[in-house]
Image (cartoon, rainbow, N blue to C red; front, side, top):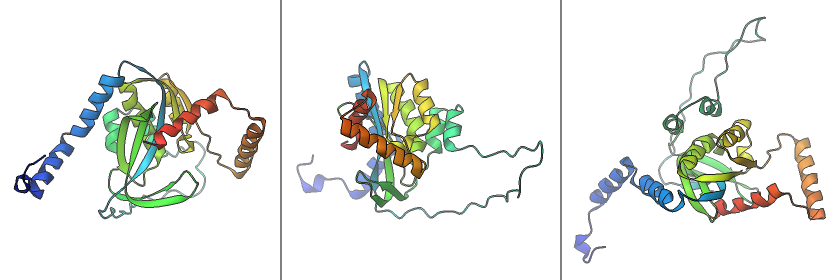
Length: 237
């Protein structure tokens, strides 16, 4: 602190200091060192993955409309193969390095929409902080992205960072992460993925609701559902 008001540095000095902190990734390096010191030699039972909204006052980045080349109409000819642009998840799973995956994530300020715990959609201007939290709500890894980026796009790079810092057993994720490539990546790290199913049809949604209702009435809980309840720790971070 400072003893006198005139000793407080100017706004410009603070601005330069925080700019240097950002460029050198000081906060990230200190956080990584703390995790390595206190959790690096421990076995973590569960890693809970989720994201949270970060509101910002700055103006959202204007969307630049990309002009895509016109696609050929109709069905492809016999023997003709039309190459599809791989998704971000497919590129990440195809062998991208962690540095490449992080560089590929958009970080510009924009508008995001997220469904809260009560099922209502909320929107905000700013960013999204993606968090991997250990048992007890300790954040092990964090990545910042544009607010509009879907949670699933950050799952693999976030898992890679966490895997390098701690040894864990279970990966707990909500329905936003329900993708085969995310599950496969979790298993490739030697983890057990527990991901809430995302019903992609009304029929499947009704089936799941009926199944959950039956379990509640019978007071029946699977081992997986009991472990999945540990995920509430990340919602309190």
